[in-house]
Amino acid sequence: MTMTGQDEDAMRVLQGLADDRSSVRLRAALAVGTTPDPRFVDTLVERCAIEPEFFVRDMLTWALTRHPVSVTLPELLREVRSEGTQARSQALHTLSKIGDRQAWPAITRALLCDADDEVARSAWRTAVVLVPPGEEPALAEVLATQLGRGGRETQLSLSRALVALGDVALPVLRPAMTAPDLGVRTHALATERLLRDPDAGFEFAIDEAKRILALGGSG
Image (cartoon, rainbow, N blue to C red; front, top):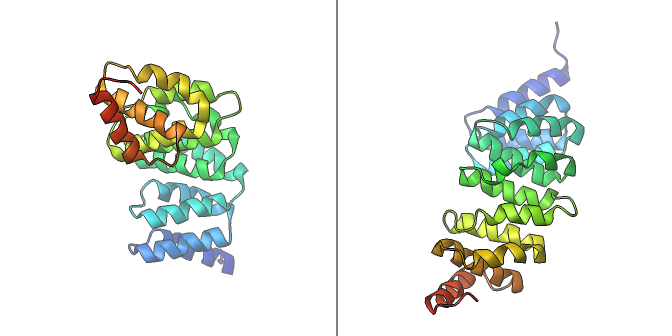
């Protein structure tokens, strides 16, 4: 069977997405996003799971957002259940960029509490984008179970997610502010400070929380 010009172009793009050079992969992803073609969606999703370069992954995500949701959503929803941590994380990130609430049921407690910090952070960011009206308090309860987890970046991501939910986060932060675990108390106090004053900055909020706890208070 003779290949058409379109088929040859598609083959070149597919080869470009798998090229050893990140600059070539970046251009290929840009080309797919510039001229969307549903035939590329599977490859874009598969590439997201293994692509080592951040900027290329970001372009792959952008390319996916340029395709119809009816094509991308089923692929991404399968990917969030993948065994690969990058596959789950990147699929969640892409769902947050697409912003279609049809994906909300896929944001499970298991993902929000995923053992991998990058997956969990992606799940938190995606959850606050997709959460339907009325579901915010339940989401805040699950997010609060992760207070005190991980290093600075992980804790900052969780605080941002809780702050994004607004005042519905307060009822779950207050008990955590007197939790037995010092790390949980500190993180909860800092998050409550950011909720009251989003311009305070995370480092300042953490330092203030530590000072308050050192003086024997809880805010």
